[in-house]
Image (cartoon, rainbow, N blue to C red; front, side, top):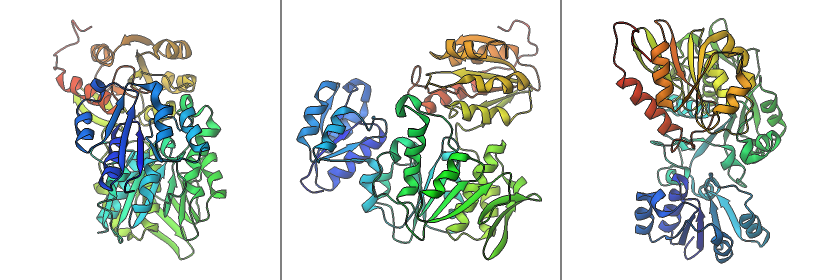
Length: 461
């Protein structure tokens, strides 16, 4: 990297990490972002302190800057197919993503996890299981704080250790040589269609995780998902299935209340399914995938059982916040697409007040009609997607326009009775009103914790 002229496009967490990685190896680093300096805040000082030259809020200069670089690193939040980037590739300039930048330097073995939903829970759970087995392990990738981006993991990687990475479609569409020794696909349902243009392109981006595998690697695939089954044709590694419904081999499944792994050596009981302390059938699938990956990595059954039983839900993923006057409040802000919201709804029996809305991603909300009709007392609509959601859900459930998450919570608090559940599961991105889904979830939790108990509903809004 020494003396290479590198341009980092997009200065979010991954971009800042990539700039730090490059500067530390002697590259001459420039950073570009369409956001103005004020929007990046403290990042500006940190980047300048590394010697990074910045171009901020000057969208029209990207083509010029790309032409001056011999290495361009594209952050996941930046469209891989922007014309200046496509032109740079056509001219022979090396254009990579942050994951690809790190790949040649990352020591040890890699487990990569992708899917429309459940990536973070499964990634963190795999790391927890390997840790319970005493393996040197680190976790990061697309998760967000406190977990680092991939380039930050290079310095702490070791030849005998494991790096467990959450990988998004935005990251995977840019990989070329990055290789996961164990790669897992949890599910593939429509998401990010505003970025990828079609479900087929979105699914193909995720499939690249398996196309770079070699003989001796493992692909852990959801037998119950049609698209995931198709990835079996793309890997040079050995396929290991997981299924909530079928007996699979080789792979993990549930039988007589036990999570079982079957392969040529026979069957191994890994843990009791009831020991998984996560709400929802989708989390049983996540546990199956994680247990399979950990077992293939060499973790013994006893460690997997102990790790599953001691795991706790990741923040913003069906996270219990509090019970007040007999009403439960759950934060599932990470439900940023319709399928994630569907799975959240399926995790509850009935009596739901569901907060829906945010920034639409080209989604079809009609698939939620039946579940909302059978499980919800009302849906509270927020954000710029509210009119579309209201139109598509009209007649299925009582709809309450709320505008903001805070107002939606106030309305739900005023109507919920003992035994009810107020659930934030938006089915949308957060960027119309929040920095990200974490910000949305934190605001929701803070407002829930600020609610005061009342002796009666009298006087509520």
